[in-house]
Amino acid sequence: MNILVINCGSSSIKYQVIDPEASEPLAAETIERVGGQGKDHAAALAEVLAAVERFSIAAVGHRVVHGGARFHDACLISDAVVEAIEACTVLAPLHNPANLAGIRAARRALPQIPQVAVFDTALHARLPRRARTYALAQELAEELGLRRYGFHGTSHAYVADLAADYLGRPMNELRLVSLHLGNGASACAIEHGHSVETSMGMTPLEGLVMGTRCGDLDPGVVLALIRARGVDDTDRLLNRESGLAGLSGRGNDFRDIEAAAASGDDSARLAIAVFAHRVRKYIGAYAAVMGGLDAVILTGGIGQNSATLRRRVLQRLSFLGLTLDEDRNTDACVERSHPVADVSAEPSRVRTLVVRTDEERHIALATAAIVGGGTEVRQAGPIPIAISARHVHLDRAAMDTLFGSESQLRELKPLAQPGQFAAEQKVALVGPRGRIEGVRVLGPLRRATQVEIARTDEFTLGVDAPIRRSGELSGSAPITLVGPAGTLNLEEGLICARRHIHMTTADAEAYGVRDGDEVEIRLEGGARDLTFGDVLIRVKDSYKLEMHIDTDEANAAEMSRGASGDLSYSPPVGGATAQLQLKRNQVH
Ligand code: AMP
Image 1 (spheres, rainbow, N blue to C red):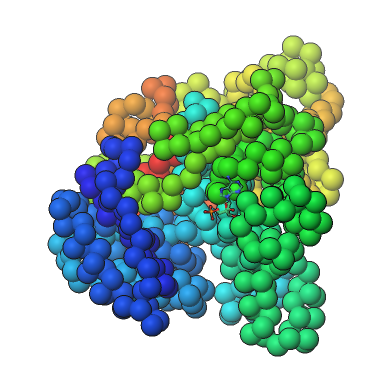
Image 2: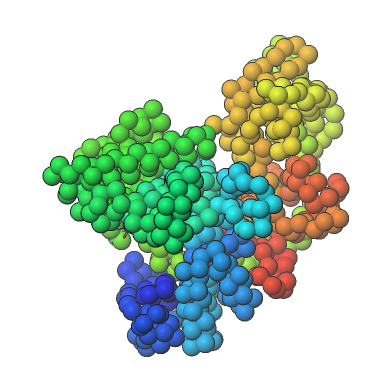
């Protein structure tokens, strides 16, 4: 299947023809001098189409810079989607109009060919509220759309997938820091396949030091600049004349700055030192955000090519489990045919990977997945929903401590999952701020003690529990349990459970999903219908079909016990026709 990938910018159009099965693009070119004084986008696109006429094009994938809060994934382009992208133009006034010009021209010229929009912001669209919120008066923030969106999503998603493949581990087990260090630069914390923090914010100006952009600043600096130079000059200064270029006074090409630094230029040395320091700071911060780290990925023109910069960034991070192998780092070379180089020293618990990014290929793969039917599968019947109140699973040692040596769980009533039961025993949970009495113990005993609470409980207890699948306790939160026979201080074990669905292999086949997939679920039958994203599929033949949500989630949908949910497709913007179908995010 040949995909035409179009990246339509304000002054140029880049295109490639990509067959996802082939390692090299079939065609790749950039048409310069588009818009402004040059030819218009329609004329430039006509050139593109003439150039690719010899290929049979199955679909067109368009890069779209800003999808706002609306687009969580790539999607098929309809009139309603075009309108919604237009509505995001205020957030990316330079980029979205150019992207839209390309989309309009391509739809006019190729009306029979499906076209897909792939958003730079999509990976970050589900940033946790705590990460996407600026500490501003919320009404004002809402009115003006002041929140963090994040960018470079196509690059971060692409290199993270390659890293997971290389590590031979499913994405939904991994905690990755992806560093895209090019002329634009951003860091992204990817926890179990989701962006949970990223350094660019409402605009691409926040975060790391970039070629010409300043990255993080005290907002007081911006105010001082506006007072001294006015708004337009400040805009230009911060976007075009700062960063590596501003610091070094030698332009924004990192190679030139490295050469100048090597020959003793103090400004160039300072530019590199500030750049590297900021990247290191983000690695540490993101390891803290995720409660641990499995790999650091370096990509982009600088991350892929500068061994000296990599060394500078990664030195003295062995306390995080990260150590660099000097020779591997110096020799690292990534190409299309071998896009990943492992530069970690052998005992390194956390891997350091240099990965070649390829945003066009990511767009082609996302487009192929959508037009190839990757997001829609067979429907099956509704799924029963169980609402899990806060509860505790105990191991043998915890049982001994809390209820006495050799004590046994007494079954109160069976749960839907075969062999599982609610026990008569209860414990109290104690956090730094408060205490919750009467928390049910579930049986049978497990290999590790695990406490599952809802978000609301965090505030009662004064704790911060990560969202995890059951059993994934490394880096989870501490909690104290109190039973009739004693008290147990757990260093980790407290989680907020990820919503999930248990099913058998036969169910999975009927719904067209696999273990570890994430789906969207439309809940009906409550007073407020609701679609949940990021619902994890867990497949085992001993399971009984059932979706588990916690009390907060059930309250949000005003659900009572015994309701059911349907696997559902996130409806294309403006259209409600695709409901009751499944959407599978590729998280493997
Ligand atoms: P990108 O925006 O990803 O194309 O990256 C552009 C940046 O990568 C520029 O600052 C280049 O100077 C830098 N770059 C490219 N090749 C090298 C290299 N071999 N060594 C150091 N920096 C490089």
